[in-house]
Image 1 (cartoon, rainbow, N blue to C red):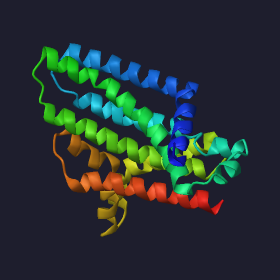
Image 2 (image 1 turned 30 degrees about the vertical axis):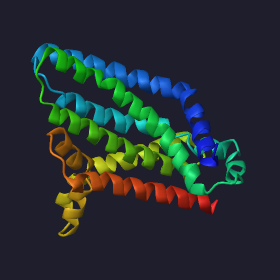
Image 3 (image 1 turned 120 degrees about the horizontal axis):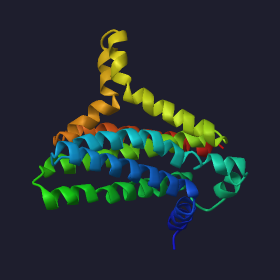
Length: 233
């Protein structure tokens, strides 16, 4: 087995044996399941638009909790130096931690697809917004996990890592609000940095490469910076 595969296996074991993972999973699925039941009962409309927006908020709040221990725990336990002596490039260490958390979040999204199955069995939903919504949530998860990995690489305190990650995500969420306070052309930059602005197009069933590129570009940038931080150690 190659070194990157060993690293990924180690991180998956650490992620899925942590009580944090199961706590986050329980909160995510219970809240979304409860909301889906109430929404379907009261509106009797076969769509997941409201649920997707709730998942969007929950991911912003919960992903920092999942990623806070990625490097912070290694720093606190003084095992990061030992990990860096492994015969593998630092980028694989970052990617292993990133992929382990992303696989968990993807599993939560896959479990929530049961709501779409229920709508398909008992209604006639428009599946374009459903497919688009899940694609948007996956890309959002990639960005949130990469930001959480970056902030965790900067500190040995897990609470600080989670707080910084949450703060960065909230600033991106409300970036378009700052457009009214800055002159042109900075207002266009603020609008284009908005998380919600690029997410709503997916939920509406539209797919623009610029929206997908936004999430992928920022995710790669955060992972690059995290790799640089780890390398400089």
